[in-house]
Length: 229
Image (cartoon, rainbow, N blue to C red):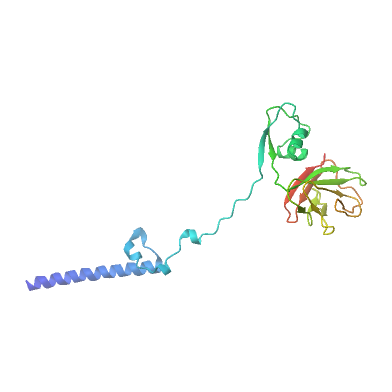
């Protein structure tokens, strides 16, 4: 009888030692290499690890997501009988060239009632290329810029350029600041700069029919484009 009890004692002791050894091995593996496949280490053991050494959540270590780039705003306009590109552009205070280009038309294409156009909504305070006057004639050639309703804008460092590499940079002096409703002329010829007239200083005209005029701010962002008619 004593022999049987001794055998049972050693059997239970062996089971207990084996279980402790298995649990110890799994625990050490979890600490060194992470969780075992299929959750072999009981969840209760994972709570034994110190909170100070716990792995941060993935959301905390992930790279911050950039904000979506802003998109240009438009409204949809359905053409009415008698509408023209000129009348629609005048109503929405944009250039005819911009309206035509955005909608994939040409100036010679007729507008039919019921057609749908996209009308760009310019931000308050934007500067528009109103027109190119006297294109091809050095004595009168100039670009007219107008300031839409909004706050005061400094044009120092802005650029007026074409699609052939010609660039005019707005000077530091006089410090040209456009107020709401204000305008400025950029003459191609030589002259003395004022707060309403700037001079490129060239000895030949720049603009011609079909040329694209581009207005950029000091950071290089495009604010307006205009196709010379």
